[in-house]
Image (cartoon, rainbow, N blue to C red; front, top):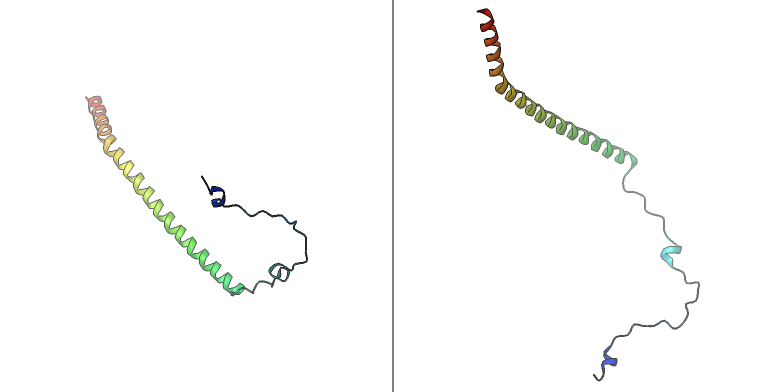
Length: 102
């Protein structure tokens, strides 16, 4: 194929050595101090107190709901076991008492 060498892209090649110079980089050499924060320590403390209070309220509500759910589940389990076992228990006690009194 004719001309394929001309169509290839070639990467630039560094031929001259890089020498250390005294080029000043203003962003690194003369950095300005960071600006003062836009909020005061009192504002930060106030926000922290509000967040703490709201977080505790949320945690208490979630725990309270979880405890109620667990209590309802346990109550249902106990009620189910009573429904299942109580008739047999009553039957057994009645038979023991009635048969032993004869």
